[in-house]
Image (cartoon, rainbow over all chains, first blue to last red; front, side, top):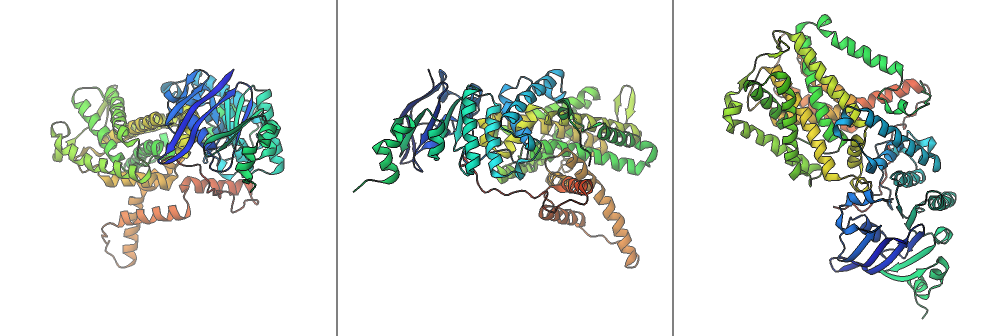
Amino acid sequence: MSLLEFENVTLKFGGLTAVDNLSFEVLEGEVFAIVGPNGAGKSTVFNLISRFYEPYAGSIRFDSHDLLRVKPSGVATFGVARTFQNIELFEHATVLQNLLVGRHRHRQTNLLSELLFLPSARRQEIENREKVEEIIDFLDLQAYRDKMIAGLPYGVRKVVEVARALATDPKLLLLDEPASGLSVEETSDMRWWIDDIRRQMGITVLMVEHDMGLVSGVSDRVLAMADGAELALGSPAQVQAHPAVIEAYLGKVS
Amino acid sequence: MRIVFKTNYMQDIRPWKDRYQLCLYLILLAVVAAAPWWLDAFYLGELTNVLIWTIAGLGLMILTGHTGQVSLGHAAFLAFGCYANVALIEAGVPFLVAFPLAGILTGIAGVTVAIPALRLHGIYLAIFTMALSILMDDIIVLSEPITGGVAGKYVGGVEIFGHLVDRWGTPDLFFWLVLTVTVLVTLGYINLLRAPLGRSFIAVRDSEVSAQAMGIDIARTKMISFALSCAVTGWAGALMGLFAGAFNNETFSVLISIQLLMMIVIGGLGSIHGAFLGAIVIGFLPQFLSISKEYVGALFGGNTVAIPGLEFGIFGMILIAFILFEPMGLYGRWLKIRTWFELFPFYRKDMFKRQKSYLKTERLR
């Protein structure tokens, strides 16, 4: 069953066609990777799903909802969580607070019960904490729980971003270059985590990644893009061997 | 250094770290509440003034310190709260109803202003709100039937449960009234910060794109922040009116707005303590200056000198010094001093230095 569906989506910035008549489906329970050279439109696909951009044509459906009919903040309430290529954490807050913001879509209380901190608000906070602690435990963030983001090293911030996305309890997790800037060891950690996210938590993963080792290690299907359009779609091995992909990365043999 | 061994989630959720800290704050509250017995009338008045400024500072802190929306127009909301309170009392509404209502009305006025302001960021928002503050002067003059225009209004004491609460007649009762409001507002603020709404304010301040990706409606969150901020400021304005006894269109000038913003920057943006510390500086500085002026005058042979604009000049210098040397304000400095003692002799100079990151996702504006 398909969870996310792109149908003939086109996005133009002035004269530039960033995404050109793109169609693909992400199936429930798979790890789906998008690869391609710089400027291929990979992150733009993510920003389309997050509703930061309005497509020129086409439709985007998630879990039988029409995504194009909701506000950017509504996407998360359907169960789509994401990370950002260049880390967008809440800098002047602790790791714990960052993860708790992830729980925002499950908020049941209203302004008054929060101002008075009624038992309902207290119960909700304890539930949030329990859920967040599970994720801290899963991603080994215990040591950083009460640290400010502003003082954390890059590799840890990257993990905190994944943790914050997981805290929303998503159905679909969008990872924008989860391994960029990570060391070899951290990349292999990330690989096991992505595997566990899919297997243990049952979350579908859609990721953009340049590290082909990571892509072929975890993903079931790969979409290769260039200039906003699809080049090849299939298993990692098929895509890597596809002549159009080789041409896009390495150029033509003359 | 005290290390609290946490064994359940409530230890993180409740506002105090441990019983020791709770006791300290309760003792502080008791000492302050007993002020009428250990302070003379003049300093009690000054302390009341500081507390009123604290409430106003807490109001602006919600918007600027925690939601990241700079406002140079909060004097307009002080004025709105002040006039709303007095107008309601004159219409025969008892104070205990009129006072909360004045805050709520100011909150509604704040939301009305917030709607056009939602699309503005940073300096543009500051200019917009500053224009509002300047406009308020004219609005007060024009709506003379309610506000008394240029002539202004006089207000005596108010009655609470049959007791006359008046700044001059019963300064202790008035002080306790202000203290009660301060404590209630502070408790509400603490609760807000440990609940989802307060965290969504911080999220909007630090990164709007990722706040959106977490399901936070930016426009709605900013609007609620404006509403809460203005309501609290309205209460401060109402108390300020009662404290001053007389006010007109020039009482709540744009200078008050600037002073309010300076206050929370000096105190420390993004902390409740900051509003209190800033108010203490702003509240006592004029007295301190006039006392030291006499002292300096005496040194140079007798006469006290009048230097126009001295107060604002000194305020400005203090503000510049803080922005240059201690952007985290007085509260930030206090945290550093405390850490120095807690970790002695292991404190490092760079402990509070923030790592600068120059990477930002394509900002969508």
